[in-house]
Image (cartoon, rainbow, N blue to C red; front, side, top):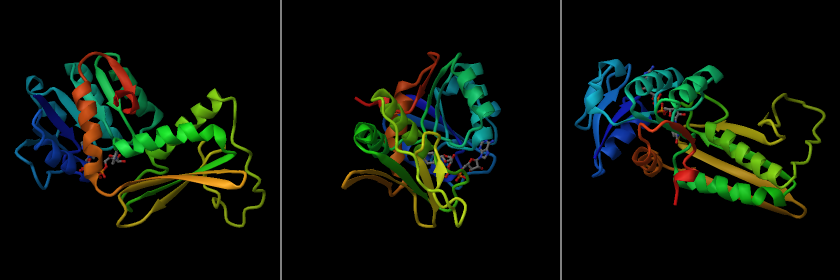
Length: 256
Ligand code: NAD
């Protein structure tokens, strides 16, 4: 039985994780930590700070808070040798350094998308990339998301870039020279891959990876309709993570 604390436990993801994990036999949710009091506790205790926790009652911290909350989770887990699973996105370089620093003293799994379908979509995109001239990513999320582009789309772009580099290929240069409206071609993910971000009410998390080659196109689309889509992946990470130091980025390597 792994005893979990959810940092950001009052948020949309925190509440979804608390509800789901309170019903999975090999987990117990012992505490929800958040700067705001959660609407539902699902049998757990509420604390406004990780520092109020009794370390002996905790095995793993799951973080779906915000980038400052991640730094608190990383600091607390490193000082008490507790496993840490991070789902929060939008970290600055300094905040990322706090995570990599913590991983030299304890185990950390950090993933921009815990849904298994999204992980598989990245695998399929990496397989397809060397066979197409161009690729663009459209990521679509709910209208409360504060960071853009999504962490998932950036990870997808990295997976495609790595695959292209391995194959000794690159996407063709963008021919656009004249912009009637700046930004119309989206953001460059750094390797010529464009990312377009859409924010609308009613959406959860969706992504299309569009490949184009001579006379054909291939679209790989993934949809998270509900936050339950992230539970299986978080559970895989929480079962894996321990106080053994090291950082695992993405859950691809944890899937059988
Ligand atoms: P949300 O705004 O609903 O919830 C965030 C919660 O964190 C809020 O309750 C807020 O009060 C709390 N919080 C803010 N600062 C804090 C701090 N310093 N310490 C503790 N708690 C703090 O957001 P959400 O939709 O639940 O998303 C949370 C994060 O998870 C975002 O970064 C989002 O991009 C990410 N996310 C990741 C995945 C994934 O698969 N990796 C999936 C969905 C969302």
